[in-house]
Image (cartoon, rainbow, N blue to C red):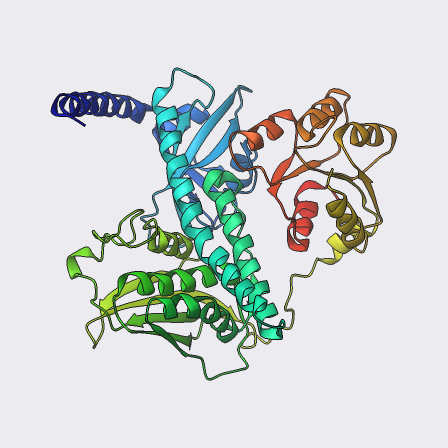
Length: 496
């Protein structure tokens, strides 16, 4: 780039920056705050919010949530992801699109402070919105590259090992574990593109030792390639059974270990698990420490920012610690960074959770309530899916839970079946031949078919989710659908 072109580029950039600042200043008028008090299930609105929503304050949380799609996002006590989009239909019956981000400054976990901003997703004159989406897409693809790299590389190494000899049980377990990690990354990609479709916290029962053993097996080869060794210190208690989001915790562990491998320039990484039981709650403590160069004290506040690599040029996108912080926010956990005795970095993660043995609780997996169980026994389900294997698996697995499962191979057949027979619930794919899911839903709604329809799709790019909801879908969820997700769909979408 010659000097003239460089000067013109800088001038244009400054002009655009000033223009953006003016636009953002004007947008402040469309921002308004609410505070949700989960202890009383009420919502408190500031003056701008009262003016926009045309509602008095305080208002019951259930009533306030009824104006929003997706539903139950506000009722759920989990944090709201930055960038989560809502569709709001108020008393004037006008449909508005809002984006929300949490500005949690309250010390009480019962209070959730959310700032809304009105947006227009479909006005082409909103150049700042388009520019923002382009930036988000670039960041998204950086996240994809960063997060997919490790599990794919692990699978490649395991396949190379298998080519050298007969398969072993250890290799099989490692491949299963890596595929699970890959699936969790794909789920995170869904949340990154459409935060409003973010999967809820999925609680399961596990022993943290096994989780860290799995993470260790995935990181061992990468550490060896970088001349490092990863050591484990496990919890000396085989009886605890913790309840939390196992996959998110594993992602935290993997990214902390991977960060030490890439950035510490040391020779050893120590991963230590601890369990601290208090009177009212317990904490899982994960410490990842290395003997490398350490992190300057003045930089500890920057390392969790996206794309921040402190000037290093190692492989990766600089998103590992950002993902750690994001996951911890969702789990209500925290992390401290300090210098250890060897001069290296020490990350101490603390996550509140429950030891089911301490509570003398038996269930390990999610069990449906008696009401849900009775509902499933009489449930007639239609699955519209063009993939023959998914159709077969859906019919076999869901058929064990519900009264009857019918399947259709495209939207046209699904439409014919849904208009000739009464169903309690329809699960439909999006992309299908002859008639796709959106077109089928539109036709059914125009015919007056009011059965709950849940769109199940792997397509997370663009406005597919919005298109399905606009067509009349009650809910949009990501593939593959798990039994826990199916039970939640039944409980949320079907009136008993």
